[in-house]
Image 1: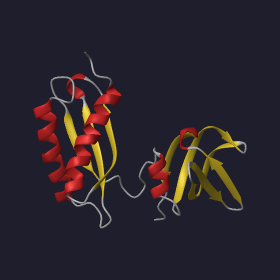
Image 2: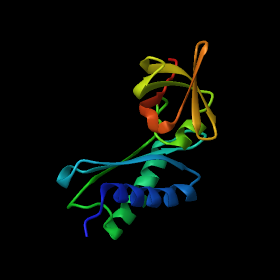
Image 3: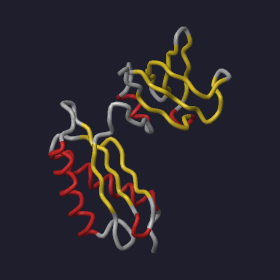
Image 4: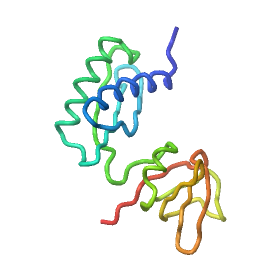
Length: 155
C-alpha cells in the first residue's frame, strides 16, 4: 500500500515532535518535497531562547535515525534539513496565527478581501477567526482563506 504524502508528513511531524519535546523544543512546521532520489524532508524547530546549530544537529540526528529505522520516507533516499523557521516565518496553521498574535505579518489571500489580495498589518486571533489590523481597517478571516502568510520583521 502506497503512503500518501500527507501521511508521510504527519508521521515525520509526530517523530519530530517526540524528539523535540524531550529537549524543550517546538516543531513549527514539517515539509516533504520532491520525489525519488531528490526528496527533501524539512523540519522547522523553535524555542523561546532561539534555535542553535546544536539544537538543529540534535533533532536531525534523533529524527534521522528513527526515519531510517522505521523506513518512513518512501523512495531510496532523502535529504533531511532541520532549521529555525526564521524571523519572517511562514504562517500556515491556526496555531501559527495564534502564536503570532500582536506581531506584524504580510498576507496574500486566495480571493480579495476588501478589494485587494495583499495586506500587511498586525495579527490578532478570536477563537478560530484571525484579525489583521492594517491602519484604520481590521480584516477578519479564517486561515484557510490565506494563500501565503509570513511574519514581517522590521529590519
